[in-house]
Length: 93
Image (cartoon, rainbow, N blue to C red):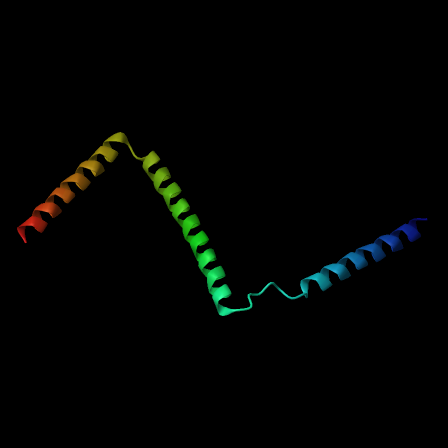
């Protein structure tokens, strides 16, 4: 009984692997025209950019959560001062 069960199991596994190998060799869904391909590439690039922006925002938020209150105030004051200096330089010229 054990031998028959083992043989059936091996045959079933072999059948499953054969179906999987046939499925992977089928034609991929490729675009027919250049415009469709460009559209798909643009969509993917937009999606990647959005994910990148989201990760960057998350990292920035984490960085500032680690900073002390005094450090945050100092950076804020420095940015404000630099903007003021830039405005004065712009008016001067």
